[in-house]
Picture (cartoon, rainbow, N blue to C red):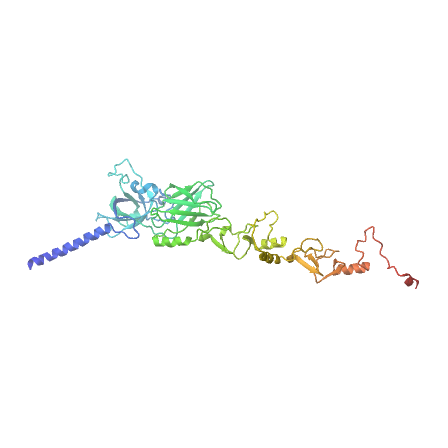
Length: 469
């Protein structure tokens, strides 16, 4: 009994110790959907920003860290970790270990890479050269350092692991450059956080690969002014996302634009990919691929929104104000104007090349139906002897006139079928008809009184028997 009584506490202690040991091992290799690596050993120091300007700049090129959304949760990496700037924007979780005097138990911090800790070869790696290769070293703002340790710790042992970044909003693109090149600073990248490849596209170009200038500043030698800009960003975990028409056509250098968000989970990426269904469709106007974000369908034909324009004035059309004839687009004013000028839509305006239409083979029945739509187009105007089309025809007593030709022959007054008078095929308004009858007594003399060959106006000639009476 006494032996069992002594062994029981020892057994309980060993079980408890084993449980603690296994928990420590698990925590050292614990990974979730938001982690990208296991815990590794490193060291960390801090700096205190005595001047507000110390929070501006850095080897990643983010500028004012507070305005860029990073705040004081930032870190500078030694040369062994910095990867020549490719890792800029990545997120790490740090925790203090192995120093019970200075560590704050149960705490960790998440920081984003914004700077570089250069090596100091005047000191050995283990004697003052904290950031010399092969050391893995983190330099933190004192505000971040004091979240996990007391400031007196100095050069402190830590553990770190790479995690996915969580960001509010989409990727931000700050555009700068000149007429011959364009430079883009990329910030606020979720997921892996860093960027390994960037492409840019204008409305008149294809996708152009950009080169890393330094940190997350990317550039390309191209003039993309007066074009809406799209971007394609690839992170180190292989995820690629395209942000279409992020910058409008009238963008300016110095502006920042927000694009799409890199998803944290592959399921979201798959859902996002469905947003581009139908990318094999071609624009009727330019014959280039039409994506859903820029797709417009009219009369079962697919167009880019920017290509949906009037054939004559080139103004952008809407579904509520366009007209179409055999695939040619017009705004309503020019559609009506063209039809009224020519009587058909087979001609273009003056100075505008005629639209060439492919010849179509139609049977006699279809041809008959089409010809009936333009019945009467061979009739001639009584005044000008030109063709009269139904839309501009005036018919009186079986005679056809253009609306503009249906005028008083004496004064050129505009008349209508309800207020005109005709004498021997000559048209008059009522006013001039009465005036001519009262002055001349008949309609046989319509010349001006100033003509040399006109006979003087006098009393009517009477018959001899009436004169004798």
